[in-house]
Length: 326
Length: 81
Image 1 (tube, rainbow over the protein chains, first blue to last red):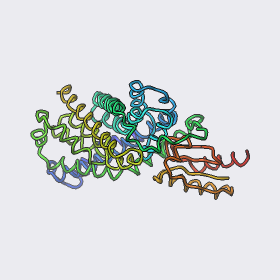
Image 2: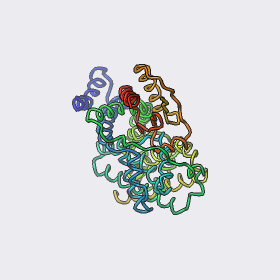
Image 3: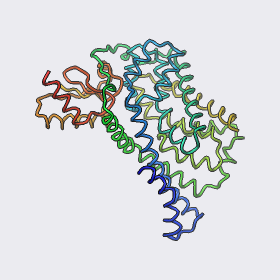
Image 4: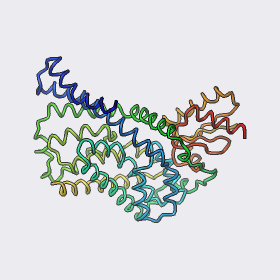
């Protein structure tokens, strides 16, 4: 049923717009509206499929289990493991603070904890799955590698800076009591399917405004911005391209689903892939609401350093990609 | 019976709260429901993902919203023990 819907979507809008409504193809307005409907339907379908499959797989992991795996690991190995686990552990950004306290009070080093928190939104299944479908598995794989690298390096650097002094003292005073039961064991397949279905509803319910804004902006650019506009102004030969992209992306708050239609359109308009991936990472990994949440446990200096180190790492990755892919 | 819903007040915590209320109404179990929103206290229960559900000081679920049926079963198990 899902596959059928996807195939129908590929073909139906041409007929509706050019045939039934008699609108001229290639006019900016028609092109924009066509793009809007086609892309909204396409991305919504992709999201439903990807979230369902990934949540099903992820129901075997939990933040608590990840913490147990990371407990007692030293920096270095710990950063690598934390980044990897950040990608596969089910995690909602509203849990960032409890996770931070929970990890630190269980003896996980701060730098390792931060690696986890950076990787978690960055190497998300939605980002990777959509890149795969839209740009092929090579780009998706490259994105995963880059996301992991950013999380490992930034977490390690932050750990080296002895940032403990900028963590709110109450975090270190938390004492653990109570037994933790493993929620992931003993679920039946039926329960896991049910969890996955309800997660699809929750995530779509949460991100659809971002998705519509993203596709809307994408549609406008698709229809009106000349094909070589970005290539001339922010192309591969512009040395500041990546910095500008990340500078634009950090204050923007969206998620992988909202940003994907923009990435798709900007790529068509000639922006290099490295610049685009850096833009996408900066939007997804760094956002003002998340910083405000983290301020509950980190002093303002550390929030600033955190954002700075992650941004620099993303910029580095962007330039690296533009060189590799050129 | 004392039931605690652990969570800073995000959408998932509110959904869990209303599921707990529905399960209690359905089962007729007499229980006090408390909301725990303090981060340090939440973390003290040993959970690292919200929302968390605690029945009589035992963590029974964390990281996802328990369905009404699941809470019903948990209430049943606890009141028989």
